[in-house]
Length: 176
Image 1 (cartoon, one colour):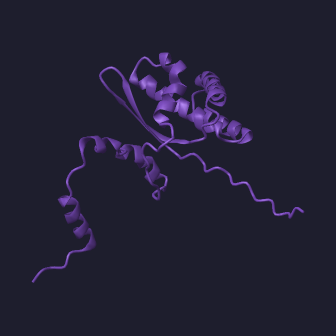
Image 2 (tube, helix red, strand yellow):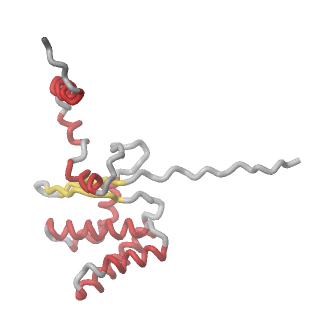
Image 3 (cartoon, helix red, strand yellow):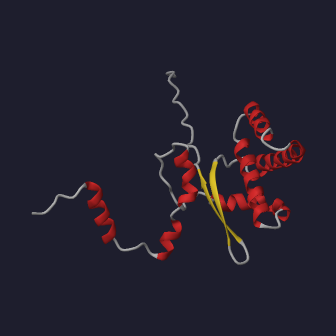
């Protein structure tokens, strides 16, 4: 007599029978390390969408945003620090003014006293750049992954979607 399989066992068998994804399609899947902070924060109900039509890739936008600062990063460790600062500046810009200042103060207290002035100066410069050249982009950057190739870096960015356009309420007054 056959033993009845559990749902998980059936799924595992079904998955094992599936053909592997083509090589190019595998690259589209975000790595577990990119998604892990979302799981750790309790954000388990999300959908990852790739290359949406008429939506800029955030990795390309972030590289463009970073362009004037990349000479400050001669190696991977420095590039990681620069990316972290750029993402802080980018996301902080999306908060209202009072909350922005409070978050920057909180963040600067985590740094050694001798690094705070330079950190805040660079962050403020990046905030000004974001407001001047990228103000229309209101997507939050949730996480990133930097990998090093032979001659360049590859950046994978996880971000929110653009907010939906605000609906304009219909005029409820009757006009003659």
